[in-house]
Length: 155
Image: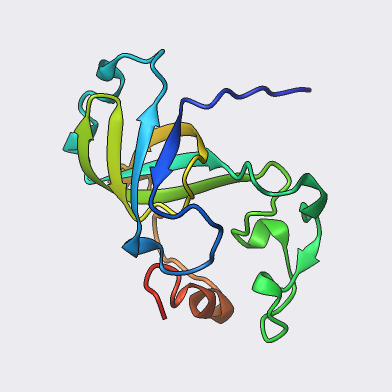
C-alpha cells in the first residue's frame, strides 16, 4: 500500500537549524498554501491549542531508526524502541506537537511551542479538545522527564 500526503502549508520559524532544546523561545507561524481559502482556519481561534502534524523533511532517510536505541544517544537512559520515543529519525518522519494558538491572520496561524524548524512541511492541523486528552491516570518513565527537562526552556 502506498500513501501519498501533500503538505497543507509550511512552517515559518525563527529557528532554521535542528537543535533539541529551548523551543518555547522560538516564534512560529503555519502558513497555509494558497489553494486553501482563509475560511479553512475559521473558528480555530476559539481553541487555546492546536495539534500540528508535520514532516521531518530534513532527516536523512539513511538515518531512520527502526529498532531500539538510547534516546539522544545517552547511555544513562535505557535503549527503547523508536515507537517508545519521539525522536525525529522515525520510519515515516512524522512529528506532532500541541501548540498554543496566538492569532490567525488570513492563511497564517501564529503559534507558540512548535518544535519544527523554518520550512518544515505541515501535514495537518487539529484543534485540541479536552475529550481527546488522556483519560485516567498518566505515566511515563523517569528518563522521559529527564530528557524533556530543557526541551521547552533553554538550560
